[in-house]
Length: 430
Image 1: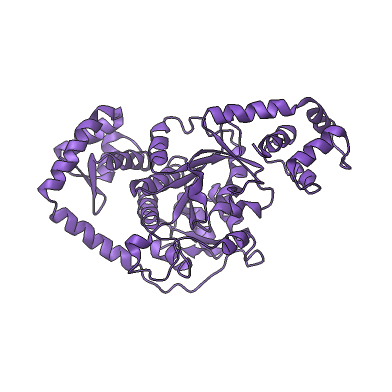
Image 2: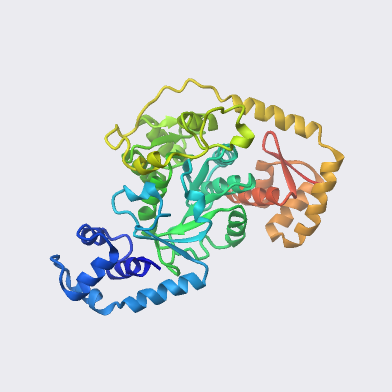
């Protein structure tokens, strides 16, 4: 498998995410060259006692067996020297030497990517904004990247999946680890829509707390734009925002729902530092207007002349552009989000003009789905069978927070069991 086993051997010797690996690779063209030199004692580098011990004790056969085991389990390995390795990661400090992948790796190829991050215990305000903005971006061909955590991350991923679009989940654990607990159902939904799970951590690696700050550099690098939906002053999202800015990426921040709330203190801080306010999906599309990634078949009349995929030249240069810009760049953005008004009108019209045939079609699909509902989803369906309810009322009746409720509602929407109405109202589809 080309150089794969040699790259894996290097990570076994030096550890995942250790920049020492790149000090070694700066002397060699190929990972196999580094292996042969180190095993035969020809390198000029000096190694610590633990490194020397690993070089001696870790065999290439062990690395190869590990690779073969991954292949048998359906886990694909992307190494730094592979053609499919994301170009935006090649140019960052200490790029991951090996990426473990489950899903469709081609979804990363020359795509316009948007990283969306925020709070695990997110408010209704930020969850609703995440769902709407990420859905609109996904529908126009943007690839949504996030960290597959509760709250904002899951809302972003499911918004893309709900549109039948791929999304990329960057994990802080092994790709085979059930984290967060109980998210396997969401994994299946994402994979069914062409999504991808990636991690630099080998299969079986638990979700240690120290993994996530290191993981954030991948989130920052993959997204050509980073969106912060909700962050406290100590949130890890601020780490991602800072890394994105250092890479010359645009950072957009959702204006706080409450300027006195600690939950949005990070949002206020980033805006004060010069991050751009996120007022709608059109703000992001404007960044890509000269060559954005959209579904041309659907939006060719509206976005005439915009390429769906970036050029190879732009892809090669993507990691090095604007590296010496200010920490946050402030650009003119005088465009109103015209899509919001038309979207609201469309929702109101659809609600009023719901046809009998559509109802019959949906209800047929629901009957098969009800047998697979979780206990919480059955409670939601039971409440909505009696009457339409506001999300806040559902949250109060069920005794769960906004982020947990929104993930359950989104999954029910994906299955065609319920319908979202304007004003955060929900109803059952009969």
